[in-house]
Image 1 (cartoon, rainbow, N blue to C red):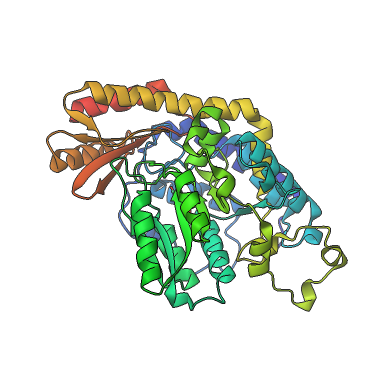
Image 2: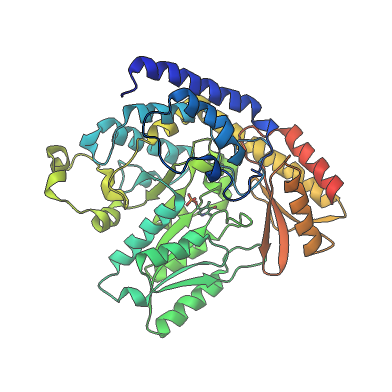
Length: 461
Ligand SMILES: *Cc1c(COP(=O)(O)O)cnc(C)c1O
């Protein structure tokens, strides 16, 4: 019944070959899957097999059943959403972690899983120019979670917990700009926080601090309790950047927890020139970004840092007798189970560690600069063409633009581009204006891909 190590070796080589073939061929597939709803499910038997299907048949179904329903995030012609990049060292790191099959809930359940995670997240503090005190030997610390949504939910639960004596949760208020990610509102729902206020933005879609101040004061007058504010560094729609320093001052005046969501743009902070967008992190309480977007680390891998780990652990630590052990009791180790909602955790730091070691900090910075450079060139083409207008500033790798003939022309262009199968872009809308999002950020996107995209836009506009 078991797959012997020898069988594993043989099947494993076949899978690695299959993945390597996919890497070679990914550009040839239509970027967006073309199946109809139910088409993939209809190829799978209604009942599970009673006896083994055999590995050969499972592998061939990768081509026959799975591939038609794949959307090719790893295509260099992927300009949609944000990237969700894979890379060789990350895939292999994930595989090695799967091979070890450890569950790293406590330090003692695999010291390597905890200590490598601490060390690598400390490296990232330096690499991204974050406050020194966020390192594990300071007051703060970082933890890997599944997603930015989880990290934000956790931060909001901490924000709620530390004010729990002052008001009922239904009277608590969290603030974020009206461009903030939906995970903020969802986090408030999960945490049972009564109110989530969407604050007005300025012409560049960044939070208007005066509107924030007014909202807070209005809520206090109404007898509510403001508990947290979330700043975005790189909103999902347009990569707008909230004025973190001013928001931090307001948060300080009102004792709000200040969480920063840099899910996509955090990766840019590997390069010093982008740190102008987050100049005042000293007043920030928590910060999250997704290596699983732009940093070539396979989904899933999110990082949350807190400036002070005490409130986080105080909120989430529960100690049943069966989890007690001498290492934890000694207080000398970190048990990451106390840093997030789940108990169990995968050894995700291995792939993150391998990605940083394989590419080196210089390699990662070069990737960011390369992508942003191509996005800047693309934006200059948009600007120079009378048929198009830039819709928003483009501080990172996302360029948003409209067709001057209006919403219908813009939406039609996006649909026509996606229908070619040669590229994927994202149609979006803010207020009454439709626009197209083009993100240059896929690991293998090079100038020829961006030029080919522009040629298509030129033909189809
Ligand atoms: C992508 C994104 C998220 C959500 O990320 P998940 O890891 O999928 O939860 C949150 N905030 C911003 C700004 C994002 O761009």
